[in-house]
Amino acid sequence: MTSQIIPVEPFDLVVFGATGDLSQRKLLPALYQRQRAGQFSEPTRIIGAARTEMNDDQFRELAKKAIVEHVPPSEIDAAELDRFLKRLTYVPVDARTGGGFPALKEQLGNDETIRAFYLAVAPAIFGDFVRQIEEHRLNTPTARIIVEKPIGRSLVTARHVNEIVGSVFDERHIFRIDHYLGKETVQNLMALRFANAMYEPLWNNAHIDHVQITVAESVGIEGRADYYDKAGALRDMVQNHMLQLLCLVAMEPPSSLDADAVRDEKLKVLRALKPINGSNAERCTVRGQYRAGASAEGPVKSYIDDLGGVPSNTETFVALKAEIGNWRWAGVPFYLRTGKRLAARVSEIVIEFKPIPHSIFGEGAGPVFANQLVIRLQPDEGVKQWIMIKDPGPGGMRLRHVPLDMSFAESFKDRNPDAYERLIMDVIRGNQTLFMRRDEVEAAWHWIDPIIAAWEDNKQPVQLYTAGTWGPSASIALIEREGRTWHESI
View 1 (cartoon, rainbow, N blue to C red):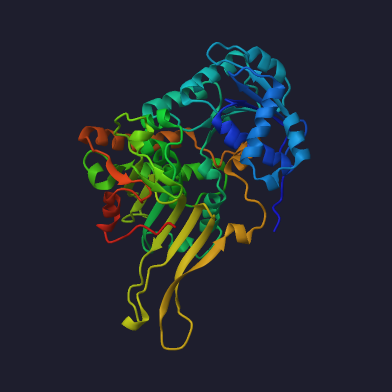
View 2: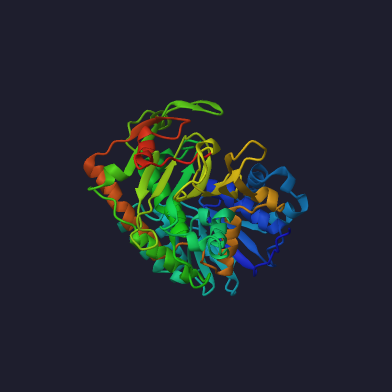
């Protein structure tokens, strides 16, 4: 099966922070792949902008090196790469002083071409870039801005960021990016729920026992020590990625795939989350921090050692039990867990259905397990529906728990585009469906802030766990004390 590539209109994309890690690892390779797929119309330009002094040729060399390093060799086409590099230009800029912005304005010109500004920079300087865009009148009627997470570190700071960006750009031109929403399997969750008659009638508390959402990383802080120690796992992963996944699982059917119709329903979920605060945080949350252990590559240091020996109470692991106060989900717990230096790199959603009310099979048939729908986001993207069947062969009734397995790699032979490829093209199209609206961001912080406050007020310590395991034992107790268990995520 071959996917249909629909070209986008010609555009100018300005990447602020173009020499940084995000640009080199994700943005430049993603843009090259869209060039190779034939999605660009002419004339399309990509303009790198950063404080580093370099010329066009030096930036093209940096981009070439990044693409060769981060794109599989089988997907490097010399002619396409050369065409892509010719699209690139570079302007040194300084957002604090405004240096370089007149040259950027001259390069962009005054035409009505779609232009997008990507803030691939530290959140602390979002405001500086937005002010320079305004002062130099770069915000044309077709301009839009892409804002990377984290958007603030609390409700107050998120509102501040939103107000700064919103003072220059209309909400319909602001694209708050969460790359998890661009993953193919995440979008397939919408198709599974709303394009199949078999699931939506069962998608409620009458049939679903609980939901698990796991985002596990086997790596440590990977050079992000300064940012991560100020953020921690709750701010870094739960406030954005994991709550967005929870919303897609739990939201009511929207009236259409219109961006605001979808985001209205997600917002209702966020506002229906039952509070976790000083009265229940110790019972509903677990904080962890990895200590020295081992990975597939060999021994690994503790989080404290990764920080250079500086004492820290920052969590590298969070598990929590969330509940949604509405009719559809009353009594259905949502268990979330995420962490660094865990046993494997895996992101998945598990929908566990209620067990059958009565088994007609004797003890010799073996146990009857509850049905599960497992949506694997990474790696090995796919969907598994676990069901009970008879074990083939003579000798009586023996039951077996097996998956109906749909692997994306096997079912769709085409290359699976990276999330950034899809999201950047959606920005150019002006489609905000997969991007967070301002009130969504603020509603998520409204739920997260009391958890942080409770941890601080109660002085809830981090519980140490060995690197290469699935986190502290308290996270197992969190789910098992209610007669459930974490899905085997390998």
